[in-house]
View 1 (cartoon, helix red, strand yellow):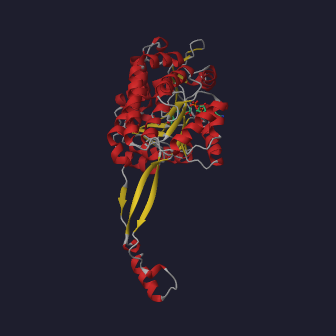
View 2 (cartoon, rainbow, N blue to C red; view 1 turned 180 degrees about the vertical axis):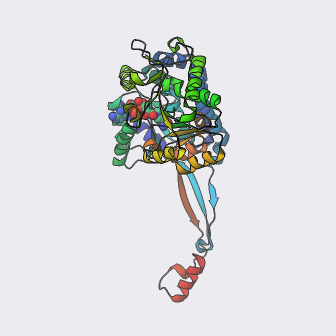
View 3 (tube, protein in one colour; view 1 turned 90 degrees about the vertical axis):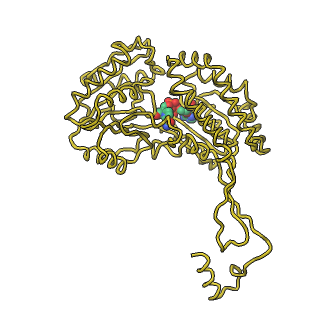
Length: 457
Ligand code: NAD
């Protein structure tokens, strides 16, 4: 812990000295990060393959591409986002002008989750650095090879007072959480999110919490069912369901259930083969604890498709479960694995009423051709973000702020929203000294009251 404290003190001093105030310095850091990642692609791919068997394609498409996109958009817009803004300065404040100065918070702690280990640790670091903060990143210990790879390449190429990776598990994280950072950005479970927020409250540190939850996926009659089956299959079984915004469960209209499930089976076999254990495009479960947790959620009497498992490989076949009720164990917590429970309904209004009673999810997906139904669901349900007629892809557009609501998180990032998340907007009124209207000073009078009402009302 001694070395963590020394590192923290070094970064504190550096941020107090304004080491990252020049935009040129920040841009250099972003370009260096892009080069370091590009030059170490094979090291990053090998590490993630060891942690959970993710292919080079997926590593690029679902991890590195998002980081590169963040770097690009920050480099392109930094001058604009970081510019001092003039705001209106009413007559009551005459003489003078009002300005907003975007400034770095100072020292930022980013705590990552293991399921997209590069993206979740480094994508928030991009706007944090672009906004001029000194940054410590703590990746998840559950993906030890990727954590070590990030520590190696970042710590080799960046000076510790501006950007450093600290590896560690709960003890190290709790120590980091006891330090007076100026901003904490956490990605992980709702349970640990509460621990982070409690710790941050001790020092009144602002937090952004990117958490999880049960994200519903609704399919209505009239939707393009073949397309829906393909996009839901991809979104659910990507990373073997270990995706914070994966469709957690399927709500399907009774009339189209059979046809749709057959289409899903067709897509599973088309995308991952009849035996996905052999597919290089299908990853394993991160550890034994999660493997056993998922196993306990499979009720053999409810398996519609799949259900095969292999403990030695930590493999669970893409599995569809039918005849599911809201009270079933699988419907109680986020699944975070390749199991898709299917609940039937006859009236979308019953679904909306039910979802209104449940914790607000990180994502929601709706498949329908009806604009009216799209509008109704968007207006009546609260959720972090989502897609109409697709899954997952909203995360990949940096012009859409990404974050949860309620138990699925608070705050957001990606694109400009990321820059705002790591920026304090300092408001300053500059007053002229050549004139001072007497109206605000006592003794007060009826005339002054009339004047103030005229100026400020
Ligand atoms: P987790 O909450 O177990 O761990 C996240 C981080 O917290 C890790 O770095 C870990 O070291 C640390 N941590 C764990 N226990 C701690 C404790 N007691 N005190 C202090 N720190 C502690 O989450 P996970 O298993 O890595 O990830 C899975 C969860 O994350 C899922 O719920 C998923 O939905 C969510 N998630 C959310 C997003 C998002 O962007 N909203 C992205 C990915 C994952």
